[in-house]
Image (cartoon, rainbow over all chains, first blue to last red; front, side):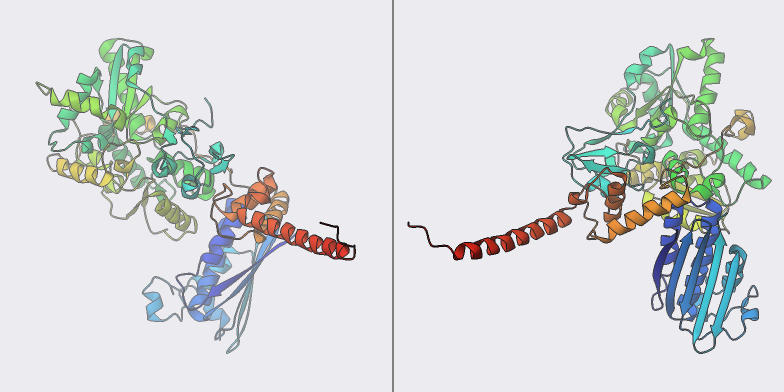
Amino acid sequence: MTMKFHFEVPGDDFTRAGEASGELKLKLKRLGFSADVVRRMTIAMYEGEINMAIHAGGGVADVEILPDRITAVLTDNGPGIPDIEQAMKEGWSTAPDNIRSLGFGAGMGLPNIKKYTDMLDIKSVVGKGTTLTMTVLAK
Amino acid sequence: MDRFFHSVTLDKDLCVGCTNCIKRCPTQAIRVRGGKAQIISERCIDCGECVRVCPHHAKKARHDSLDMLENYEYNIALPAPTLYGQFNRLDDIDFVLNGLKALGFDDIFEVSRAAEIVSDATRQLLADGKLKMPVISSACPAVVRLIRVRFPDLCDHVLPLASPMEVAAGLAREAAIKKTGLSSDKIGIFFISPCAAKVTDVRVPIGIEKSNVDGVLSISDIYPRLVGYMNKLEQVEPIANTGIIGVGWSSIGGEAAGLLNENHLAADGIGNVIKVLEELEDEKLQELDFIELNACAGGCVGGIFTAENGYVARARIQRLRKYLPVSCNRLEDAGGLNRLQWTRPLEFAPVMTLADKVEDAMRLMGKIDEIAEGLPKLDCGSCGAPTCRALAEDIVWGVARDTDCIFLMRRQIQDIANQLSQLEGSVTSEHAAEPHLPK
C-alpha cells in the first residue's frame, strides 16, 4: 500500500517554504507514525524545502508513504551543487547575506537532512539542478 | 471520575446551529448535526473559544456555586491574581481579600503566593539541568490538554509541577487542619477562577491523582456580591502576602518573568500557541530555556470567567504591583520540591490518529482524500463540519453524507433536473407523433 503526495515549493516567496513539510507532518501524525518518525521526516523535509527556496528558486517535492518507510524526492532546476562533499560539511553555506539575516544559511541544511534520515541520495548537475532523495524508515 | 468531563457545554435550546463555534475550535471538536452543535468529547481541550464566540450564548462553561460553602464547616477561598484586576481604583489587595471573608469564607490563601513557590521551584529545576529543554509551562490547563492530543513529541517538555492553584490548595488544607482540628472532609477549598478549563482540571486533573480543590467559582459569578461586600467593609485586616512575581502570573509573560532568566518566549491566544508548538516540535526553538503559553489572549486576565476586559485588568494589576515587593514566598515554605512534583507523567492521547495500525490509517486517509477531492474546498461550514476535509472524514466514519454539502446537493439536483428535462424531451417527441386530443 502506498500514498503519494505532490507539493510545489515556491521560489519567489520563501516565507511560504515550510508549508509542504507542515502539511506532511499533519498527514504523518494522522496516519499514526511514531513521534520520532514524524519529527525526523518533517525536519528533513523542511530543510530540503528551505534549500530549494533559497538556492534554487523553488522546486517540487514528491512524497511516497509506505507503512514501513517515507520517501521524499525533492527536485529543482537550480544552479546545482559543485562540490557535494563540501556542502555536506556543517557550517558550509553559500546563502547570501539577506538570507542569513533572517536566521537561515547556517550551513546546517544538508548535514541535518543526513542526520535525521536513514537514507539520503544527492544527484546534482551544475547549471541544471539537484535531486534529493531522502528516506526515513518507520519500523 | 469521568475521563471526558468538560466544563464547556451546550444549551441546546439556545443553539441555532450557526457555524461560529465549529470554525473557531482549535481541535475541530465541534460539529453541527440536526441543527444543533455537538462537542466531540475526547477532542475538547476546554479552551473556551466556542463560549467566547457564540453569539447566542448557547455555549456555556459549568462552574460551582457559593451554595456549596454550606457543605463544609470551614471554607477557604483561593483567589486567582486575575481577581485583583477586576476593580476600578483599587490600590490595596487586602480590600478584595477582606471582601471575600465578608462573603462567607473563613480564610484566604492567595494563589499568587503559591505561584511564587512554583516560580522558585522552576528556577531550581532549570538550574539543576535535568529537564528536557526547552521547558514548556504547565500552568495553562487548556495548553497542557492541547499538547496531550496534538503534540506527542512535546509531552515530556512540559514542566512536571503542580499548578499554583493545586499548591495553594494543598498548603491551605494542611494549615486549616492544623488550625481548626477539623478533619479534611469538613474543610472546603474554593478556587476563585478566571478560567473554565480549571473546572475540568479539578475534576479530571493531569499529573496528580486527585485535586485538593473542592469547588471552582467563576469570578464573574461572584463579582456583583463581592463588590457589594467590599463597599461595606468597615475595617481591613492585613492578609495579602504576595510580591510582583506572584501577581504577575495573571498576565502573559508573568510566569516567564518570574524565572529571572531572559531566555524565554511567551505566547498567548490559542492560534499563536499552536504556531509556537509547531515550531517547537520541528526543533526550531532549541536555543530557548522556557516557553510560557496561555490559551487566552493576554493570559489568565483574558479568561472567560472574568468580569472585566482582560487588557484593562492587566493595566490595573500593573498599577497594583508597584506597591509590592518582588517576591514573598519561597519553595521551602511549601516543604520542598517533592510536594510540587507531578506523580503521573503527561501521556499522549492520540485522538487525532485515524487508526491504530498505519496500514488501516492509510486506507482511511485514501478514502478521505478521494471524497475531499470532490468537495468544493470552500470550508464554508454549512454542512456542520469546520472544513471540507473534516466533512470528508465524517463521511468515511459514516456520521455524515455527501449531500450534507449544499454545493454537492445543488449539483445533484441540477443533474436530476437535466435528466428530467431530457426525459421530458423524449416523452414529448413520442407524443408529437400522436394525434392531438380534442379540446
